[in-house]
Length: 383
Image (cartoon, rainbow, N blue to C red; front, side, top):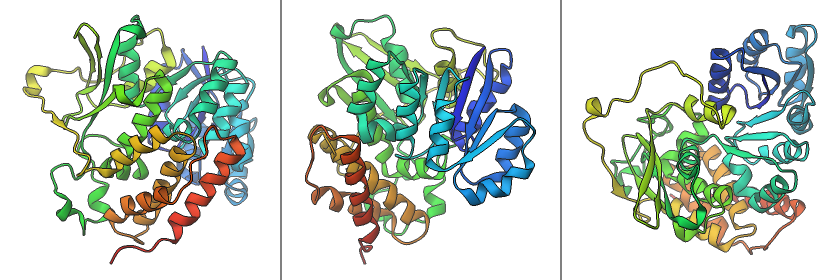
């Protein structure tokens, strides 16, 4: 029985994690869960999975939910609540499915407790990859990727020597606007941007997919997860999202991981590694699909990928600032404050004004993050 603490239970990855748990009740037990303000869904989850500890975003939400919790379920809230859930003694595995850099401290707390990490929160490594990976090595903790692309790379590397690696390639669907030119993006709406052709994801990740910031974040995450130089990380647009990513070795052999677009597959693999469990659902039929398509990543069409590479190569607080500015810009777009193309303009502006701090401490990362957010929040949209 694997005992799980789930951070972000009401989000896209969180709900799909609970789907996996529900399919295999003899294998998994939810010990604790953290959510934001989605009270109705959280209460349904608590009723079904009976965690010992629940955390919500703030005190007001905690007060609203308290009387509805079953006997034996403790309640906490806020950033400290996230850390409490991540550190709960009964759990041996923590799934970090919250969105944004808010997941950093709780992930570090779980690592310090020696818990295995199922990592769906890519911003944790983007914001402070050197601290997280150093802590994981110190405490002998596995960072098991849940992103479909990183899970694919992880599976393709199994049993192979990193000495023989030539490159890894992360595939990208191209997002909601993959067939639009830049001129067509000036007046796109939030609703259009949220209409992803392949995947069912949360709002922030779906917008990141449309700008391709998500792929940039994944490049930085791959660098830290697999200890691979940026020069050996490539991105390829693959509209069907069937090849989730692939690896090339020095002898020219290419190993890829394929499957239908279903986040439950990488979630379950992270929870069961090195074993595999049966999963209900349709099998991949390449005969039915017929053709797969690919095209090169165009850094001019998708400048957010270029900013991510540049930030990663600059190192230090540059990736922290890239992530923070993007989070604020996406939030402003979702609220209707700025246009779609303003997201990348804001990120570029914040990055261009940042003085990189190499090997930053956690306090210095938090300072750089806060400054970047304040600037990103203040910049006006382009008329």
